[in-house]
Image (cartoon, rainbow over all chains, first blue to last red; front, side, top):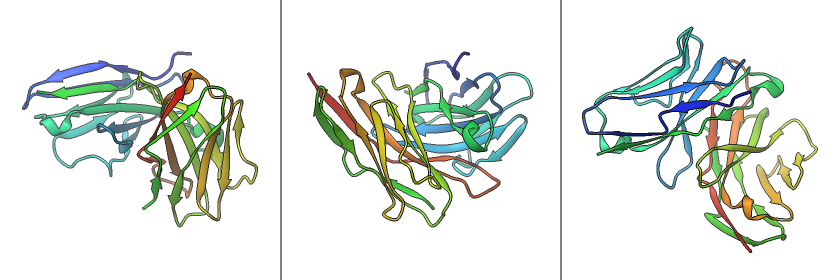
Length: 116
Length: 117
């Protein structure tokens, strides 16, 4: 059973460009979370999605950031008009459900975004 | 809002010895989960151990065990017989279990563990 897949692993963008990060959850998982890790910091929650629905985006900046999890295909985190402060590692996690032992979040390897 | 505090930015342990990493948290909730994640240099986040707040028994996973003190809001991780592969950043995390909504993880800032051969 393949783990959570994220691509690309490394992404370099110039200021003003768009960054698109992809996350494929583990097989059988329908809950996806995105976290951001700044240098020397712990992970900070950004957004929680289920198929075709954004459940909680309280951690996401109001501008330039958006996320989706379509019926088919991976979850996408999009950052428009990137700035240097967006440079970070972005992690995706997935879980099977929200109850009991099925709610453990398993993480992907992360995408390291560098904005020049 | 919940907060998680890891007061030891760095720790070191001799190979084969035992080390304990500290974590405290602040919450007004009674139902929640606590986790320890490991992040080696590869930066992959790996689940080490989880604890349900309603369980009095401390969780154990092979060489890893926790000391969960609910009243003190403390959740320390003990690593026994430390191995070189245990060297990593260790993050303590909290997750609410209060009903519908998001079950986001709230992380501490981490403890960097070095293992000395």
